[in-house]
Length: 196
Image 1: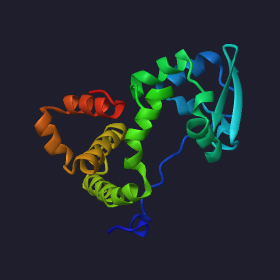
Image 2: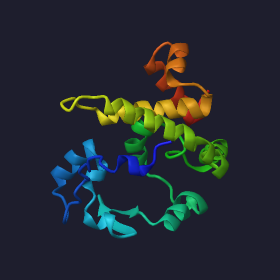
Image 3: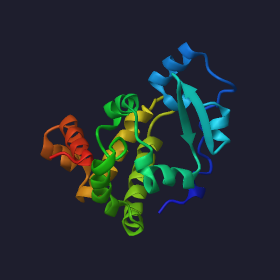
Image 4: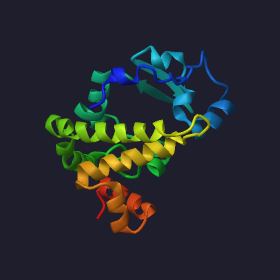
């Protein structure tokens, strides 16, 4: 197994630079379209809870773990999503655990919960580590001038990990069964949304 020390000479990639102060409204919406996290200011990285007003409504950005648990799990019925929130989240996330509410949310959570208990997660660690090591090995064979589409690479390694952990198979085998990668993604989306 590879240790962290083996990658001590790895390059340090630039992290997002939090913005000071508020972003002008037009720039905010243009940035939001491409990368929501890039709209967060410095205080989002420093404070546990931030309150903002937008379109006459109060919005909160919650970063503190106990508060997140309170909102998303312990007291979820008191924190319903607005129609605009669903419209923003559902195209990318579907109608799954993150966007559902009420009985649908409880049903999704009960269905997904066993896959995320401590023992299950511990059993995924070697699979995730192996997938990451394979990805790093592939990248180490690239030439100095070659570029990597990180978003695509992360999506592919995530698909590989899901395939190995949920279906005990590699993603190439599952793609071969389903016919193509787009079909597989659609089937995985339906699976995680709880649709039949």
